[in-house]
Length: 466
Image 1 (cartoon, one colour):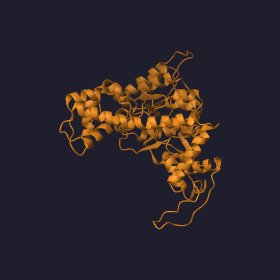
Image 2 (image 1 turned 60 degrees about the vertical axis):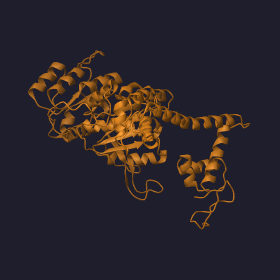
Image 3 (image 1 turned 180 degrees about the vertical axis):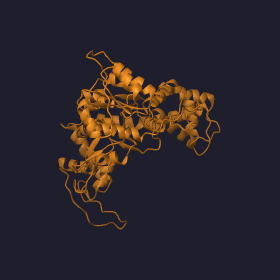
Image 4 (image 1 turned 135 degrees about the vertical axis):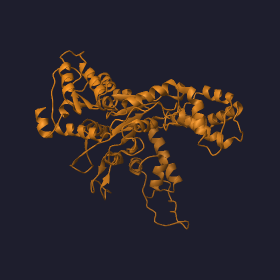
């Protein structure tokens, strides 16, 4: 610690070897940053360091960092509940990391006086999470506890349950409610572009990089970076993200200069990350770094008592006022809602368009639910039939055959335009070009323009244009 004191110049560092000494130092001196070991003795069950954090945080507004070799996730979670702001590996304890922690402390606003009890309705008080059920109240309380920490947060929940609302609520109740909030879907961007999108790149870093491009890690500043579908992050980028979380340092693509990340990462997924780790598809160290603080969003089936509030909330957003009879509400509360809150929101929108009743009845709800079920089942039924037909084919590599047909049909639909066909297939153009080589599709460029301004269709179904 003496070296760190010299490096930090005017920062005074006091040391304490036990709980009693640390409390005595805190009585005699005011300080802003506490570096605490979870164990204050050789006993592996000793957690008096966590008790120290709780007692220090109860006395004044400080930043407390847990400093140790990688502890187990349960210990880290207990530390965060006691008020620790983050965990710092022993090998990362440098003057740079200490200065970053102090900078973070100075950026926090002064503690605000305790407010009077707010209205029970979360929408009325400006919140983003609608509901008064026990699971929602528990989640809201957990968000309030972790909002002032700098630790990454992992949000778990089924698709459509509202995971993106958690990061919005974290920002709203946290110390910087006006800070930027950037979201990046790790499963929607091609791997080749994802690194540049996240880290940014320097001019000339790769073909097409004609200018410097700021990445999300820089653009978010001291705000919140929401990494949705984190389970889809490529393994190569998982290692780089882990380094950012541990050292809060990163480099732009094509640069040797290290930059500091000052924001907070909130990751979300509906996938079972523990299973991905067991399969070797997700790094174990990154999983444990993200899973220190887990927030689980309940499914709509677990909070069906919130459906009347949600109906009122979504109905208020429609062009005409919607009301549901008591029987209709009860019917909606019994519905399974596989698509969770998103499905309920879509149902309300559909009701506003397809019904003319002043008060929507149970019969209308039943009719609309049946119509929705038929619409949802049709594509699945068609896909299942297609899958059976493919499996019956007398070809060795059935996947190769299916991919070849999809490429051919998408090119035909798009007049041989590769960029348009890639969008239809939901892949990046470079991915489609690799498939074209793999399946030995011929490439012919057409330069003739149609009278309507589009390209002529190629003479062969296998000919493609750029």
